[in-house]
Length: 172
Image 1 (tube, rainbow, N blue to C red):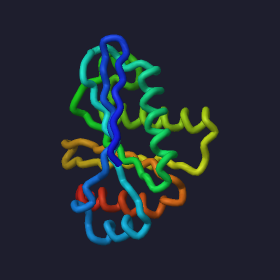
Image 2: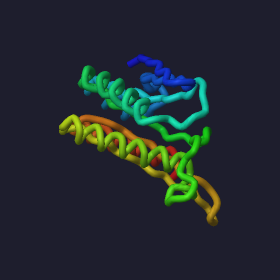
Image 3: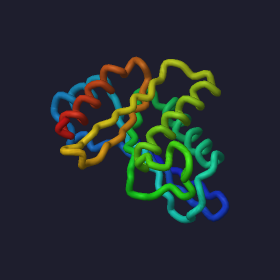
Image 4: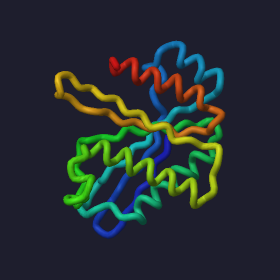
């Protein structure tokens, strides 16, 4: 799937896109399963194009609605999201329990909270968010990676295969 969406709120602009994962980079056994089931695994990417203020609930709501619309229009779509730690989060909680949390972990928890809220408010069933945390530490030094798959429950077996591959590739 190839789709993109722009959101402009005040001085902030965001580009949201879904792009099919390059299946040629996947192991043969996974490509076979995806082909047999006619599954499209697409990566969700969210980029701040301009602006520096905190991302408001209205923007998160717009992003969620756009992704949900595409997801429900494509019954064989599995959405993949990688939580990055490349850009800081403006005005993130500086005093509470989140202040020492790595940016990518914060994004992962936020992603789950938004997903759960959307599912409850729209009374959606049969869809699962599968978060993956991979800790890459040696002697107390390293980092953690956070990924998510959103898929229909009928595709849980495929998500497990994809999850196992991510864990294997990461060496954990």
